Structure formats: C-alpha cells, structure tokens
View (cartoon, rainbow, N blue to C red):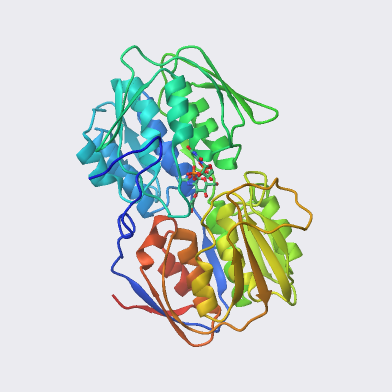
Length: 458
Ligand code: EPU
C-alpha cells in the first residue's frame, strides 16, 4: 500500500518500476565502434506530444516516433483513456484519435504506467476533457527524489482540487480551469510542460515565469500552436499562453533526440571510433559540441547528421550540468565514460539531480578512477550557480578499462555501462539491459552495425 506525504511521491521498493528485464549482454570490448546510426524523434518530446493529442478535437499525426518502451507506455495509457492509437504507413508514424476519450481508474492507469513519469502530464488535458484525473505512483529513472510539488502547485493555481489517498492523487475541476500567474522555483522541464498542456485550454491568460526552454519544450509549443494554441515566448524564461476554447489535431515531425545523439558521440570518443549520427543537428547541440571540441574530440556537421571521432588524445575537462542552454544532465553519464580515457583530472558538477553519479561505482569496478563528492566541490570558476543538491565527480585518466559484471541502474547510466564495456579489454556482463529500451531504439541492431561484439544471453 502506498502513502503520500506532502507532494512527494512515495519511495518505490528497489525493484519496482525497474524490474530486471530478461536480457543480459555479454560484451567483448577493446575495439572501436565505426559506422552510421540514425536517431529518430526525441523521447522527451514524442511522449509529451502524444499526450497533447488528447487536447485536440480531431486526429493528430506524429512522425519520427522511436520504437522505445516509454512510447509503448504512453501509447497504452492513451488507449486506457479511450484514445485510438494506430501506426501509420511510414515507419515511426502514429495516428492518435482522441474522439472517444474516457476517464480511467487508478488501477488501470497504474497497470499501464510502467516505469514512466509521463502519467502526470495527463492531468491538464484530462481535467479539461473530463473534469477529473488520477496520478498513480510515478516511475522514471531513480536519479533523485523527483518530487512533483511544482506540478501540483501549478495545477492548484489553475483551479484544480487535489486530493491524496493511498492509491495516488485525484484531481478534479468541476468548474473548469482558469489562467494563472505561475513562477517555477526552478526551470523544470516537466512542470513547464504541465503548465503548457493545461494553460492552452484554460480560460484567460497564463503567465509562466522561470520556465524551462529546452528545444523539446519549444517543439511542444510548436505542436500546440499547430493545434490552435496561442503561446508567446518572451525573454528571460517567460511564456505567455492565451487560453482558447478548442484545439484541433496536429501533424508534426518530432525534433531529433539530442540525448541519443550525444550518447553515440560519447561512444565514438570512448572507444576511439568514428560514428556518423544521422538526424543529429548542430543548433540544439551547440553546448555539447563545444565540450566535444574541448575534450579533444572532432566533429563534422553535415546536412544529414554529425560525424564524431577523436582528434588525437582526449583531454580532461570541467563540466557543469544545467538547464538549457547549459550542458544537459543526460549527457554527463556517457561523457564520463569518455573522460576515463582523457589525460588529466576532469570534474563533472551535477547540478540538476541529486543522485546521478552513483553509476560511477561500476565504472570503477572496470578500472576507472572516479571519486564522487556527494555534496559537490568548492573552488574553480563556476558558470552555474551552486545548488544545495549538487554532487561532483572527479575523474582521473586515462585508466585502462577491463571487463566486469555490472547491473544497469538507470537509462543513461545503463547506456554508459554498455559503451564502457565496449571500450574495455576483455569480456563484460551487463545485466538488466531492458531499462535501456526506455530511450534507445534498436540498440542491439545499431551496435551490431557499428561492429560491436556481443551476445544477448537471456
Ligand atoms: N523538481 C522539483 N519539483 C518538481 C519537478 C522538478 O523539485 O515538481 C526538480 C527535480 O527534482 C530536479 C529538477 O527540478 O532536481 C529538474 O527536474 P525536471 O522537472 O526538469 O525533470 P523532468 O521533467 O522530470 C525531464 C526528462 C529527463 C531530463 C530532465 C532534465 C522527461 C520524461 N524526462 O525530466 O530525462 O533529465 O527533464 O532535462 O522528459 C532521461 O531522458 O534520461 C531523463 C531522465
């Protein structure tokens, strides 16, 4: 049974939502990855755009949808809510017809929510459509507490009533929702999306301050504008939304997945290989590309993607994760694998989540020299203001990596173990690999194309 205190989500039992998947990889490393991979639409846009389809009165069409388990989760959640989701003729195209939308019960939502954090974004659209919504126990990577207080405060500001029970959270809005003035304490991606998905149909104007402005958020704004929403993006993280009475379906090609692109770039650097990432674009990755150059990597921006490789020996760097346009927290985990091969002392300050460096224990088991400072590190020139929750990793390199038996802890950490194993001499066993399917499409096929030597052993 679950209990809720404040707006925190209840702690999950260690394996809940991250149940070991039936795949283990046995990887024989020590050879560079070379070749071409294609990235499709961003997980962190596609799943939100699918939810946005609930707001339309006609069918929406979303293109470049990757075949990943987070998409499957949202697909089945939409189905539970009466949305007809069909595959289109073109690979990666989804048609979403919300005309039969219905309310669903806690148990049904819970059963389909999987390890995803997306169910919380159903609130605004469902409150508009049906006057009520439920939030089950949320999943997602265990990279910090991941509270939902910003979401709940925003929904209350729109006029929703929030009731907590042992099953989860029930929201209602019998008299409809109205525009609100909201200032986020931190530019949270999810809370910004919550406000956008709710404000577009609320009565009146919403002013959102301290909003997240990640490219995936801008792409969600583009989706909503296609649906008939009126959204203005102003300087200094201010977004103005004028509510409208109705929205229609959209047709949209999703922005490419920057996180997957950065992951393959890190794989090229870590294994001393050469990977062309088809579909990757420069504009959305400027900050990442600067770090690639500083660390001694080389990249070649082409019309249809970006080629990544080393440019001589890798060099140590200092990186601070931050909200956009800073260095994304999702990029630091794969980058750290490459930094184990860099000459000197690298420092990664993680300022977004309070527990996103634990994955480095397994890298040390493979021969890396990484020390995590759980309360961050003083000194050095800072660009990002210090946060109470931050941690830092100091990586001394280069250290030869050797094979080990490791268990995937979370999505990006899991991918990082795979590339560490590919860079390492000898054989590694990487368990619980299923988590990686949440965000990496056709991982095994792509790795084979790049010349990786591995088996799936059950
Ligand atoms: N936060 C709160 N209260 C809230 C919401 C957030 O305190 O109500 C805090 C978080 O605890 C964290 C910070 O705000 O310290 C930022 O969290 P944010 O809300 O921005 O993250 P999110 O929306 O839960 C999304 C991505 C993450 C990505 C972050 C940052 C999705 C489904 N997830 O999470 O992606 O790391 O933004 O860019 O979009 C991943 O893809 O592997 C992944 C974890």
